[in-house]
Length: 381
Image 1 (cartoon, rainbow, N blue to C red):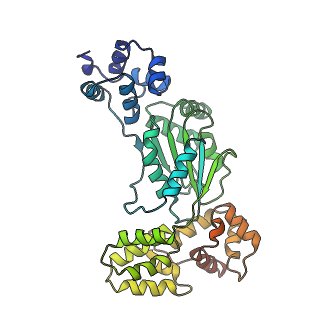
Image 2: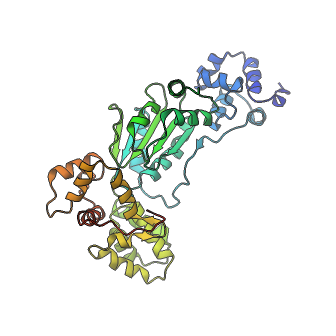
Image 3: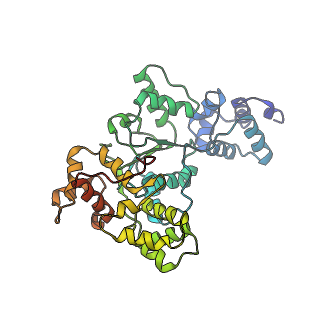
């Protein structure tokens, strides 16, 4: 077997498999990698297998360190996670949420992560995908939809298939059908971030096999009924204070940072925004920012720094809601918000159960009910 490292691509894997006396099905049973994936590597259709896939195959073949290195040299390895955004450097807390997502991924094929804009759904999904990538030997794909309508299902199916080293037919229905067979025969983690169009997204979600999709949303897409659903809640006060301390640095007084964190009401985007303001201005700006946040009607203005804007995030999410839900947002400005409006917004995750109406959402609702839009920077609009 000393010459197999000179072979190109999947030929090296085929030599190792046959030398071990294994069929493709036998190697699949021993490694947990699907026969389709093994066959695709050997035939060169999957030209860049993932790290986890190659590790599982090497373990099943009982390769030593030298043989593993030769196999890696023969078969170019693709990182397990593709398209993941840069992980939030000061990500704090959310341990329970990460545990629940991992548990849901072991029981459900589709997981919906809902919540108020700015509450950290994308950051949590990225952290969870990075942590769980080892459980998905066929890789992780992170698709940033940005709240816009998803591309045509066939176009997205072709893009995803190409990222896995597979080709999809030119015919649209055939491309979607080929993707569904592909995702059904592998163990992948798909993250569709900031989804708003369930009709286009639904054909791409796994409905059989071992693949899992996490869908984050600030609206109400009609996803399959047999899904896990998690509404993300504000950060607890202690976690919010710790996160702000990490972002600002140790020079800021504890009492001032605690007060500032409390005025961000558990929204990670708000914490990031005030941290940006503090870091780029003089230390006395902590007092000024705190005073702004404490003044009614000034919260959204204070929560804007460069291209970070809580008001812009809320406005973007608001525009994507259907009119009945936009009316429910405006109705929150009443001295006693109608119970129906609260229930409707709880249904789409803008109100998180016993946590009630977030004060920053209330400030946005007051501005919207008055017919004004929050002032946001052009870069954030």
